[in-house]
Image (cartoon, rainbow, N blue to C red; front, side):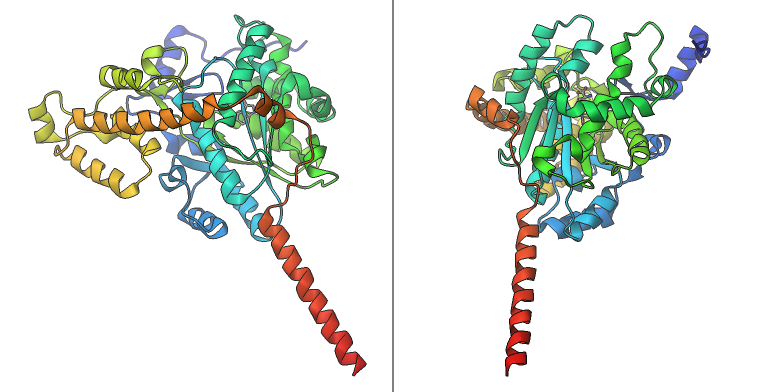
Length: 435
Ligand code: TRP
């Protein structure tokens, strides 16, 4: 075996110095170096992604005939890989599909988990395209030493019900559990496993020699749902349908690897569309995480829980006293109530008014907190009502391997109109010939 490369940096002191100056963003950990949060501008360049542009936002509006989602308008989905190429194809009536996923590591989802699903739901509706959702029971069993397969299986079902409650189209959505659907994925998994070396996996994911071998084997499994021939019941014999993956930017290492391999396997490279992280209640330093209850709002929280958590734990960028707030106003960049409203308050004009009033001290911390409590309680109440109505039958339906038509209605109509026009032209020609 090759000797392990010396780890870098080698001393404790060096680690500390490095942690002070650099954000950490990996699929396994997110920690900002500064209190104002991750420097996303730097991250885009470090990862080599492309920034979102007004041109792309306008294109989305033009292609879908509606205002882009607030996450797009507010640059919460802020960078991408090849989104422009996918949109250009769509403009030419060429298919794409959406792919996203979830590792079942907790019984209840929290607000941070909702971001990619809300976005994916909007994109499915706006573009009328099929969606595959990977539930990585294998991943979480492997990466969480404390979890048994039985625990993961139970969380997976509960998470799938949560996911369905976001309102995905049952006609166009396929949800699959890795351990169940693996037979269909396996031919592609082995192709990827053959094309990627141990060194590459170590380089991208930073595993060490005492990690279980299953961790090294997993990234190809997250790669292959981005190849359309993993889903013959949706794409039939079509070979060149690219996927587009809406998710948080921490998943980029997987899809960098995936795109690299795709090129070598002569598959379409997946496109990606990345969001910033949803911060924890206590501040911008990390993302919301199930491991700290003070930091987290769960989708199962009651209105009373939400009120208590926001009033007690939400980090405020406002003045320490009413007088100070009136005089100096709030720092919106680190204020959790404001940051959360950016994610969840739909009305742009109202959000702009709040930003103006709160940053100049006209609005008080208690008032912005109250606004957030209202917005989130309403969102959670509606979500919980939909969630309550989801049955085991629904789960079965979404997970059934069944024929799904991948073609947007718009494309079908365009094709029919073209055929009708051609037929008319032919008839006219035949008529002219007969005379
Ligand atoms: N690794 C992801 C997690 O830990 C799960 C996942 C699988 C995923 N495939 C994906 C996330 C595609 C986003 C897009 O939750």
